[in-house]
Amino acid sequence: MPKLALHWQIIIGLALGVLVGLAINIAWDAQTWRSLGVDSPKAWIDGGAPASVPEGIDLDQIPDSVRTGEYPNAEAGLGAKGARFVRNANSFIGDLFLRGLRFIAVPIVLFSLIVGASSLNDLSKLSRIGAKTIAIYIFTTAIAISVGLLLANVVKPGSFVSEQTRDGLVERFGVEAQGKVEAAEAPDVWKTVLNIVPENPFEALAKGNMLQVVFAALLIGICLTLVKKEKARVVITFFEAMTDVVIKIVNLVLLLAPYAVFALIAKQVAELGLDVLKALAVYSVVVVAGLATMILVVYPIGFRVLGGVRYGRFFRAIAPAQLLAFSSASSSATLPVTMECCEERLGVKEEVSAFVLPIGATINMDGTALYQGVAAVFIAQLYGLDLGIADQLTIVLTATLASIGTAGVPGVGMIMLVIVLQSVGLPLEGIAVILGVDRILDMCRTVCNITGDAMVCTIVANSEGAIETEEQVEARLRAARERGLDEHPLEEDELEEAAG
Image (tube, rainbow, N blue to C red; front, side, top):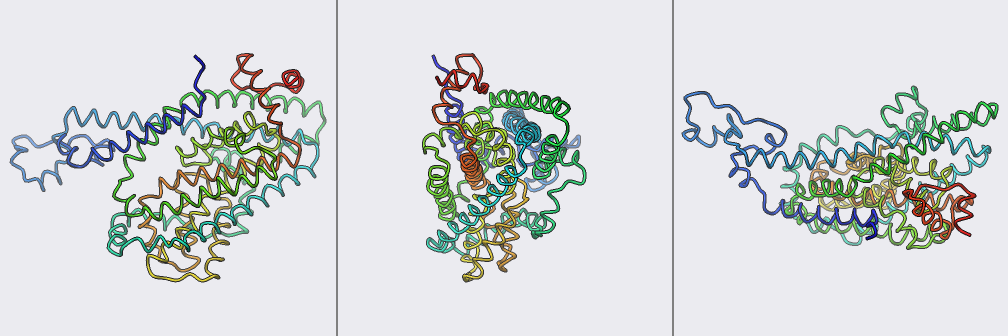
């Protein structure tokens, strides 16, 4: 029986995660916890042991208000412990998978980009690739924000939320929203550019600052072309071998992917709360419709017309990366898989993918930028404020600048939104209204982000003649399967023999 393809395994895990999460969300509530002796579920889940009751005090004789305040979870028994164990085990699997992806994100960028830059032997080619990449990223970000603004102005999602619902959501999520406001920092162009150059390259590696890692790797790769070839060859060979090692680690980590996707999705859906989703249904639909427009309409124009890649080929190749992006809500965590999909399944040469994709994971946030546009207009409509053309152009500019240099991690879009709202004078308390559905929308917009990265990578590779034909990719993968290798790349002479 043939092995089920990875993306189908992930889809199955995702679907099961949604079903289990919904079942838990509907059936498991505060009353369920109380029946298990838990009066403070959050404290119990966070690891709080049952509070000890002083000797001689009968717990049944203590009023509920006192018992809950002084002795929370005092009656928690085996059932409550079992529920907490299952929840913690589920979180452990998801967190372990994400940690594995983050573990290899920096090494794969460092090693592969050094090899790619050193193999170019042409600084003009490197600068040409860089200019194309940044220009296309900025252009698609501006398009994404415009799509979001257009949809929000046409549908007017803010008119579907009553003032009572708005105030209730502000009260419920106000404290968390305040933390996002305090964490925001207005973008500074000079500081953003300066921060690309690391003061300490080892600190950049340790903190996973991807733009600084890219800069350091490019500098090393370029300088390797300027030293004697016999000396440079030793270093390049080392990094080539380490790149192959990291790719193997990626393959090992992906073995956990279907189970991790189930764990991550089940947790998010269970915690979301259907009441919040219903209240913000129209807003959520507008955001998702905008993201779908980018993924299914705008990007295909790019990779089909300028990248020379068929619709089906492109989406079949990057499907695993899209599914993992949805589960993790992190462009940076998904980066190793995005690179593997573009190189092995789409046929983009490493010299392009190793440069374009890490930069994209940091500065290309089309989905997040589109979300900024919809959210800003939505909040303005909630409070009965009008946004003129000048205000909406300010949103486009501010969201584009805010996306550059912002880490591709879960929740960063909300911090960017604070900056956007401040730029046009909208009330920051509106963030609390949409905070309840931010996580699920974060998952959706991350899919858009990495799809945009792959699209730009395809366009740049095609313009540089650095992408295989569909026949070459199929021949290489078929030969690799016959050799018993898990989609491991073949050398050029082996590829020609397989294709022939």
